[in-house]
Amino acid sequence: MTLNSKQTKTLQKVFERPAHSSIVWADIVNLLKGCGAEILQRQGSRVCVKLGDQRAVFHSPHPQKEAVKGAVNDIRAFLKRAGIEL
Image 1 (cartoon, rainbow, N blue to C red):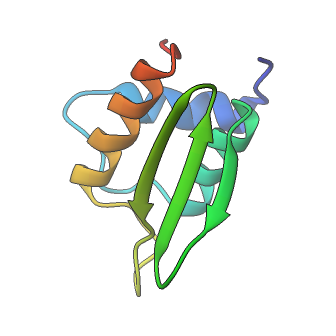
Image 2: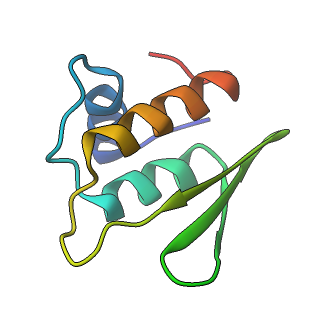
């Protein structure tokens, strides 16, 4: 897995504690794609993410563009289960 500098910065923000509430959702999606994830848009705001043998469904934020802290925590846990750490 090779991440560009923006994806690396987003990964660092995702793993910081306490969780950030200012990470733009599009940056998180970009990070997941950089990690090799398959992103599938589902009904409404649901987004299915497949990474290796891990799957998860997240809700993209609306109308704001930043992910809430709970979503950032869920993304962090998902990445850890998929074997991605800092």
